[in-house]
Image 1 (tube, rainbow, N blue to C red):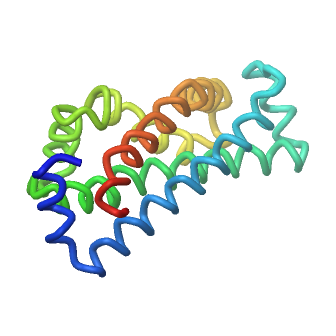
Image 2: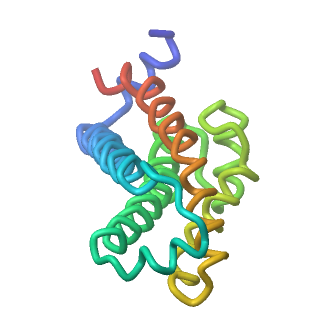
Length: 167
């Protein structure tokens, strides 16, 4: 532990420590559920045309719903709750979403603010284009599937950067 992180650890109130720990545990649980649903949904490839017929199957439809919800919840939790709490803890200051993402990129928590914003847009596309446009939904689902690893990497980075503060 660096002297600076020891100083930050000493400054954390029990409430701040509990909030950060709770958010991190929730992120880890959400990630596990997302990864499990991701495996179940994308275990067999499906085309845009196949998506339409698969959505008539309640089991498949529920997997899509779960994937979209879990992807969105994890992305929201990381970007809108954990990141600001972490930045406050690190005495980095909290700003608007884009400022926070730029800071997170500079600090190595995320690979790129632009990628993060693209993931946020994917979540919106999946929610709003759910049944109306199968090709758009198909593209968004597969793009989100490709970004599950990025979300996992972000959770791991938060965990590694936070564990000394919470010990």
